[in-house]
Length: 148
Image 1 (tube, rainbow, N blue to C red):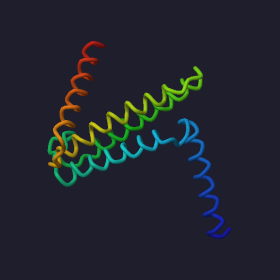
Image 2: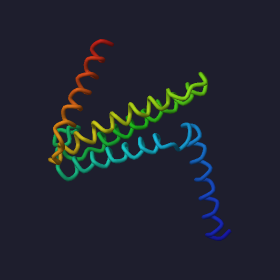
Image 3: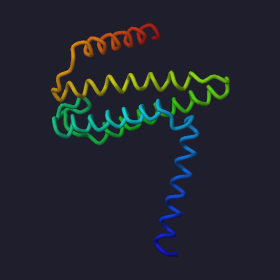
Image 4: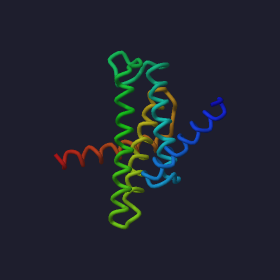
């Protein structure tokens, strides 16, 4: 077996695996692409905040911490599991909005984190964004208090 044949087998296996995973999550739609982009941007910005600026809130020194990075990846993985569950609920109930609602919720959460990371880097952003984030945070905190 030559290298070209191995390359074809590997590419085929990766293509099949990617297609199956995509199908499990309800397809490679614009909202899912946006969520994946926002998750990636947030993770990379978190690495920059910790690695370059040493201002991470996830470690005592503010520097990179492999455990904090792993926790962040685990949280993003669990968010994707919620999208998977939401898609399965849509399929079960014959609806098409539960998955989209979950994705939009996670996109909002990632957006807040991206803006916070930008703030830690010292990137200026409009005051209206700061106020909107503060409103979302207070609403989330209020809901958490009511649920407890």
